[in-house]
Amino acid sequence: MNKTLLLILCDFLLLTILSMWKTEEEAPPPSDAPSSESQDVNVSAMAMMEQDLLDTLKYSLEEEQAERNELNEDLEAKAAELAKREEELAQRQQRIQNLESTLTEAEKRERELAAARERLQRETQELESQVTAVRNEYSSVSQQLAETQKQALENQAQSRLLQEELEKKLSDIAAKEAALAEKDRALAATQQKVQELDVQVRMKEQENSFLQNSVSTLKGEVVAEREERLRLQEQSTVLAQGVSELAASSQDLRQELRSSFEINANQLFADFKNNQIRADFAAIELMRNRFVNTKETTMTVLVSDGKNVFAIAHLDSLPFGLRTVPDTVRQMELSLSRKGEKLAVDRMQFLMLDPRIAVVPLTAEQAKNLGGKPYLTAIEPFKFAEAVLVNRQGDYYGEVEFKLDADTPGFVKMQNKIFSKIFGEFSPSTGDLVLSKTGELLGVMVNRRYCALVNNFVPVSTLDLSGRLDTGELQKTLRLLNGTLNGFPNALQ
Image 1 (cartoon, one colour):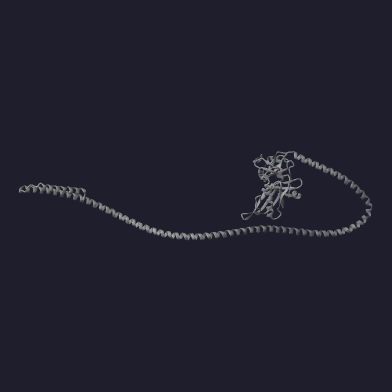
Image 2 (cartoon, one colour):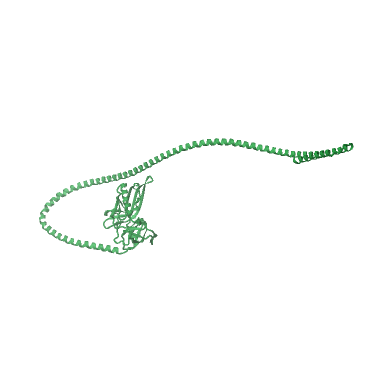
């Protein structure tokens, strides 16, 4: 029941109570006619009021019915919505159950994966330990293999040396056998000659008996001849002394004339090409756990101080340097050749004036066999302000100016750039030979800026090349060379 209907009922009851109370209060004296009329009026009024009440109640009922219908419709809608929501809730509950089931399976799979992960980790650790053991074993085997290869290469090199020595001894034996056969033939020929000489001796004895008779007569003539010969010998001695003095003076004059005239660069290079010596260096070095044959070639000349003859080269031309580990060089050979003549070198010296300059001392016979003019050391190295530089391959040259440096006695500072009409502009490099304009050897480029003046051949160390290279001797030599070079100014290093 709504508020409007409640208000109407309350108003109706209030009016009914008021009308009844008023009727009772003003009731007239009892009479028959008026009483019936008033009763009719009251009945009609009550009927009207009841009718109004019924209409009101009917209207209220209709409204309530309409509201109930609306409420039923709302209720049905709410019920449908509730059913829908219950269905959605059921679906959600199903999904939740599915998710819980899936989550349970996921947790189970996660536990299985965790167990598998732990198992894999254990297997990985075991594999890592196995790999580490295999690596250690591989490293050990590799080291043993490297040592075996090293020993095999050493044995191979030693075997090759022994084979060469054996071949050399066999060739010596063959030569000795040939010489012995030749001596046998010579002995037979000598015996034949002895027999012939016996016959001649008997004939000479007969002649001697005849000549002895003539000796007495010839003695006087021999004494006279001897006196004449002594007199002639005295005269020859005097003439020989005069000739020697004349030759010495002419040699000094020739030397003075030669040092007074400037020789052009073209002539100096032509003389160099005509007198150049090829130096071939070969070595067996240990590189990356195996022995390798290395070769170096440079062009040089013979140099003389007026008494001894040397072949000269820079340390960079050798198969090893100042920073070389001595154990890596097992053997080194050096040979000099010129126009078909070849000479094997058995020793090498490093000079005190600069330990990077190496020389090979030669005998007069060896120098003669190689041929070529030995270059004399410069008597007056500063007579001309320019010199001729020839690279160590002997394929280009140029004129270069040099200056004295008070901080580097025994060295001259060369110009950075050299201009040659034939080869254009180029720079000096280590190991190039420097010739003075007088045709003498000025020195050797010890780096790209400085030339060491070669005026003596005093050695700081000697290296034996006659057999297998001694590692201890090479180590001692390199220590001496480095110690000597460390005392030089920084500009020369």
